[in-house]
Length: 417
Ligand code: AMP
Image (tube, rainbow, N blue to C red; front, top):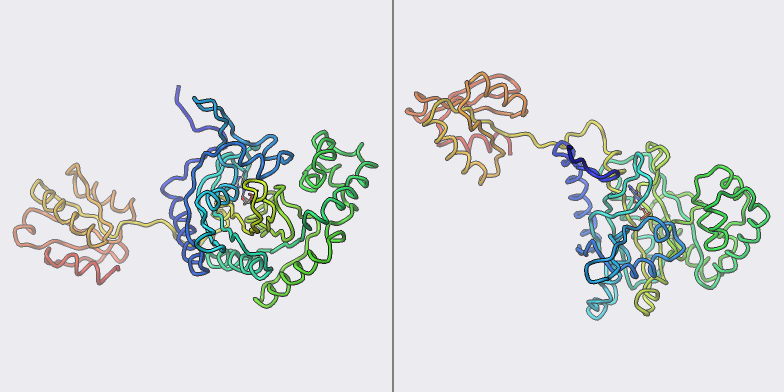
């Protein structure tokens, strides 16, 4: 039987990869411009990192992690997100001894056992950026500005930046209790999962897609009405700095984000082109995460961009595939050998060149050059080769000229590079 990929795991094929490379290149350029450095972290971590970091009573930890026991009996988990691993690396390598402020980004696959649908997969890619060691709201704004600049630079439009504050460990417990009290009276309306969430983590109910649950929380108290004066001051500053940077936002008091470690600032960038899975990126501040995983008081803020969703939003009229600059149609044994020698040099000169290895007829080679969308074809026959010449055909204009073989690289460079 034919073996197929696992459900929710996708291949990214060559005709799509140009978009991914474009997005990654722009992320690197924008983030490095903002002073961020790349970090590469393992895909597997000890399960404890996520259960303690993300929180036991979150959907991710309760039911979405790919967890298994290795041959030595350790419980390991395929990372469902990157922030906890980045924080672990920062602590483990004591990056704070060099400079307490670390600005890091990472690009790679994440794994969550969710129900696959359009825009939601079991292996998906994220671009993550995090700042560790700064509590000042200026950095919250800076991180958000960087995210929006990046999304605009790759060509996304019609985006909405949604903003909320979630309070901190001083004021959120009071809100939690208030929300619980409010929902207790409506518990008959809640789905089975939310009945459980009501006891373990009532804020999660905001994220439930079940209609009766959404109705139940429609008039629920808002977290923003319960935040303490310190959190309010912090949030006011974030908004002020965003305004200074000329960024528009809307306040969404119902956005709570799916992970327990968020405190204070929470944000999402939503696209109305995307359908139900409409969040392209999300993030927030997490001043308790380090405490959970390493016992140190280190503040942090960051975001993750979902690559699949971002790639699906790229402008449709932009070409991301790289076609060959040149196809060499060699006719005969000697010309094919010469083509092989030429192509090795052209590749060193940065010219994307292809040839036909099978010595097929000119007609069939021209057909292939056409299919590959080569911009030029060099027709190399026995007689021309003896004279050191070949015919260079422009596939767009269909015009053809005779050129000296030893000038090929120079001529092509002047035409295409
Ligand atoms: P989160 O880590 O849940 O805050 O998600 C951050 C971003 O990652 C979201 O805004 C999505 O764009 C993307 N994302 C999260 N989960 C998935 C998934 N299962 N499949 C595809 N993209 C996802």
